[in-house]
Image 1 (cartoon, helix red, strand yellow):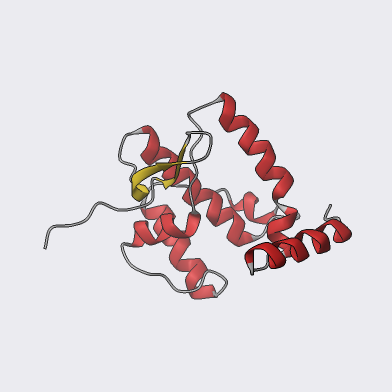
Image 2 (image 1 turned 90 degrees about the vertical axis):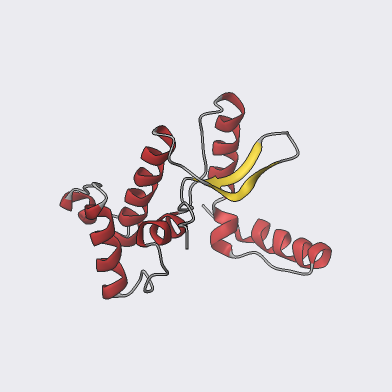
Amino acid sequence: MLNELAYAAALARLRENEGRGLSAQSYALREKIFEVDACVESDPRIREVHPEISFTALAESPLRPKKTPSGFDQRARLLRKSGIWLSPDAFELKGVGADDVLDAGAAAWSARRIANGAARSLPTALEVDERDRPAAVRSAVPAIRPA
């Protein structure tokens, strides 16, 4: 659960030191980020994906906003076309937004691309973090088509 006092202190410190803020949602994710970070230390197979970048790669163009009915339908069609099947029951789960279910499908699409060697990276030249680990969002960037 978000500790409001800790968030306020973190926000104040970030604004003072970096001149920018941090959303409450981002702050609330910190514990999960720490958990994933610990897993990355022990398992180099873990990759980061970003659903919206994956959807853009699937569409090979920008998409309509995901919170709109047409944007939702566009993403669902892209997943079906790519062979990603989402159970209708997944959309009925309590506490899980329908757009989050679609995002999980996009992550599955990216995971399949990583597994079969079709993944691309953002940035294309892999960078490393302070622990010398690759720092990139993988699998989503489509291959550039020849003109």
